[in-house]
Length: 162
Image 1 (cartoon, rainbow, N blue to C red):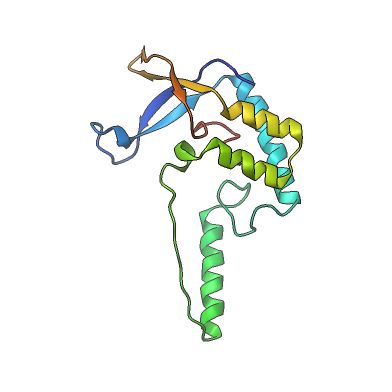
Image 2: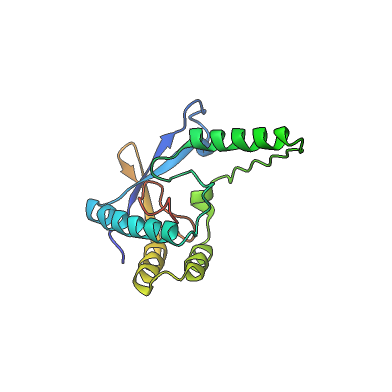
């Protein structure tokens, strides 16, 4: 499954200096038909994962109807409960820098295999992530086509569930 090479437009992150490459977030402009198919697959995959309890109930990012407030309320409840029972509380907070850009395709496919998703969805995701290419456009000037070996496209409906 491959549609034409997406165009990536670098968007300046708020408060970041424009002269630094890492100050930009690449947003993939994807064909409408591709986004529609990806949305269908993402919806099915999310339903499958939730129906089979494959994602922790504590996970709130990219889940419909949940967000940072839910995470904070859960944390507050956890801390209050521990303190009321005179227990110690430790918190570890992680931020995976450039997670969308750096995730290995083999890692995603291995997880889907462990989840035992159907072969059609597995093969679609494998094709979706394999042999990817991109072209960057800045000030109406496009770069040459470049290969992408890792990551998922930012702006794709399927990327958040993967």
